Amino acid sequence: MSKLAVIGASGMVGETIIKMIEKYNIEYDEIDLYASARSAGKKVTVNGEEITIKELTENASDEKYDYVIMAAGGKLASIYAPLFEAAGSIVVDNSSHFRMHEDIDLIIPEINTPTLNRKIIANPNCSTTQAVVALKPLYDDFGIDRVAYVTYQAVSGSGVAGIDDLKNGEKGLEPTNYPYPIYNNVLPHIDDFLDNGFTREEQKMVDETKKILNDDEIKVTATCVRVPVENSHSVEMNVTLKNETTVDEIRASLRGHDHIVLMDDVKNLVYPTPLDASGKSEVFVGRIRKDETLVNTFHIWCVSDNLLKGAAQNSVQILKQLQEMNK
Image (cartoon, rainbow, N blue to C red; front, side, top):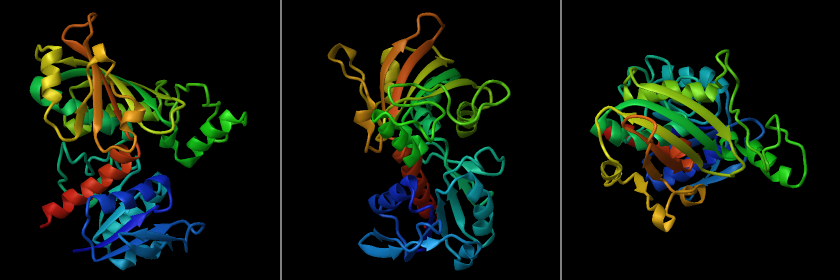
């Protein structure tokens, strides 16, 4: 049993983390919830116990937690995660801040295991997570030479502000979060633009795919798009495999994994959509077809709840993985 803290407990991801702690039967003796001064004092029920949210301050690490899950953004993670680590805690961080640090593990529990070279573990980007979950069986069975991503990302990926822009846009109000209206519109722009013309979100998918699969030789590119969908991200993957295969063999590779749901029967209009994935823990895969323009290349469509597998669920699965490792 252990002492646990959730940082950013009042946000969308933080609230979902609490639900996942209950769902995955995370064992703990004591749990504390932290947020900004604005949310401090609010009461939240966790496993039937009413917990009062505390204000996050630098003194929080004095509490000597065994595990800390952070969902408070990169700036706060850069300050507080090292403080908790120095105090002896294992920190699971949902922000992008630590993901590409060489000594920090970037973990999807179905794919890899923490080395704990550092006691900070990074949760991958939401779109990367669902994509690599779908790619890993193919990587193991056929090898992957190249993958080109196009994402269709829901507004919940921007938190409450993104959802508000979508709902307010329907009422004719101007956006306050996005640079242009998202209602009845599509924005090929997620996160800041880099000097090479890619966005940070696109670069995350490139870099994180290679790190999670531990393979720098894979050629990866990405275009990330915000769409007027409230929840669940969709990713189109154009994948070139190293060993020759067929659509049927790819389907067979994806079957038999509890965390993957194959929905691929276009004759009967069976394919995954955000509505299929929303509120579900699995990654949904379909629309598998050969790309006739490239050798041994296939189109694969995957959908997943970005607040669950893409964020809160994966971080709690990491915690579960750590607890099992320490038994």
